[in-house]
Image (cartoon, rainbow, N blue to C red; front, side, top):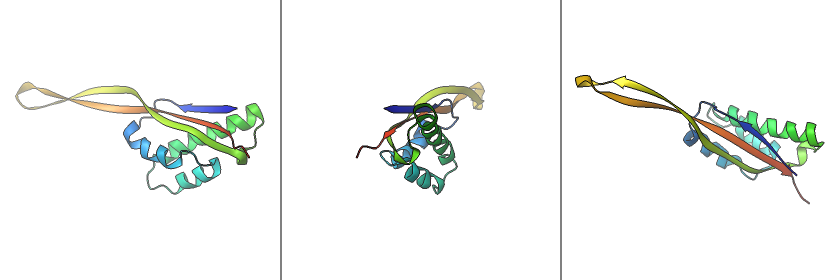
Amino acid sequence: MEVRAVAKDTGIPASKVRPLVDMVRGKKVDEALALLKFAPTPKAQVVAKTVKSAAANAENNYQMIPSDLKIVRIFADEARVMKRYRPRSRGRTSPIRKRSSHITVIVAEQEG
């Protein structure tokens, strides 16, 4: 059985989250959390929180053992974009796009 957790509108661009997501894809939950703990970016805390949430959902709702869980799928999708404008010379403007992302983690029990 697959269990999921989603962090919506994180305020971090998906392009900055994807390297962290690629780093933990296919790993066991304990190993992924250890990797994220020592990642050199504060964005890893958001990914780790979502992984912990998926593991907690599996443990509390489906009585799965957290040490047997493996990250089956994990991805970061684009979310809403806040649009702002900065004044420029000669009465013009240039856009500022403040991007955010949705992080989805799907875990399942490891077979074997």
